[in-house]
Length: 496
Image (cartoon, rainbow, N blue to C red; front, side, top):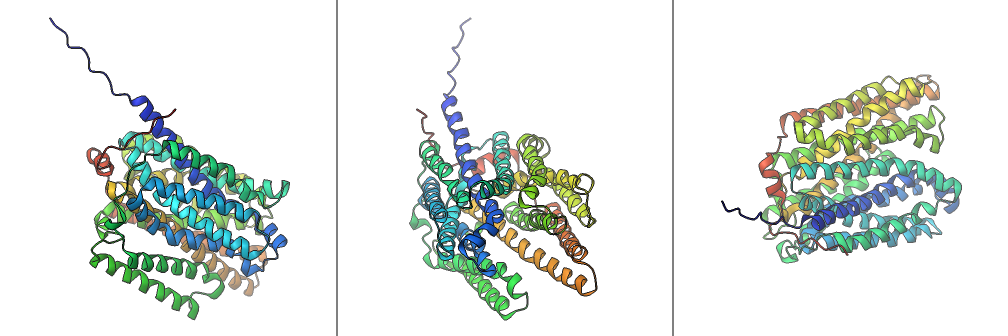
């Protein structure tokens, strides 16, 4: 009986190693972006003293970055589809690294704010295409779930490391080093990205060179984010807020009309036909608005009510980051594969809701172990929510629209965070003023204001749970990989 020789297996070793190296590069870039966002907040008092910032001017070290970052994500994502996502990623990291050097050597407020704006531009260019690259590299559902889990772990690690590292660098050296630390990470990321990221060609600017649409969406988003971050200063019903908010909405409405009628739209509206794309972006906005109650309001509570220092606060919140990172890295992929992302997302939202509910009863003289540590553990639900949301939000992205879907997902993320900070901090401050007027002492009044913020955050999570339950659908396993796969095979670069 004759035997047919077995067919040789395709040489997957190099390709597989290349993809996982590419994931490391993408995660390192995201780590740098998130690290930069959290590390600056810890060093702000030292920056104010050294450069002579006014209290209002100091906020622009954060606002300048947020406006550029959030305003350009959607445009950068679409441009990545058109000119090539690798090209956009490399350009963004180059701009960010150079701007970090400029920020580190800044000698005055204007110079630092300019550098932070440029950092935001670079971050938008790189971050907007990261998920688009990731879903085209990992098309098999199990591998994609694992890759997204690792990527989400990087985000949790960046937030945690930034809070601790910011205090260490500022105390041990000076605030300049919170920006200089980006230089070796940025240069290493650029060097590796050139070798390991797939060099696919974009669709070409002619496929979506809508200049008018680009101006409308960028102007509308930047103006909208500026309006939101200034709410705490001007108030919700001030002419400044209402007027600029109306202009922002008008620009975005004009952008939508433009996309419906343009021959080569910047953002084809077909992307919103997917229930999962639309629903996941809405759930993300609601969830991240609530999560910022934890990241910002809890930190304020520890420092202003319990008297923790900046470094102590970072260390106190470290268990939360470890819990989120551990769950996203070691648990989420398995659960998503076994039960589906929608079910895992619902479970994660329940855990986050439990954390916010617990915080609504935190006392003035809280004990860390009994009053705060349980919250740090329940917040591990974020390690379930973020990977599941990412998969659902990108599940219907075609190869030609992967950068756009990635940019849209990151844009709603930034809008959610900005709105969360503005809404929750403003409501907390108003409640605190009411309690002070009623005769409460400062600690009790602050705690009462924070309780209101945590209650609003819990309500946002209930809304996110409801949208998940009624709108989102579990992607079919046999079509998920096909939908997101490139139209043509992506060439895998060889590793020397």
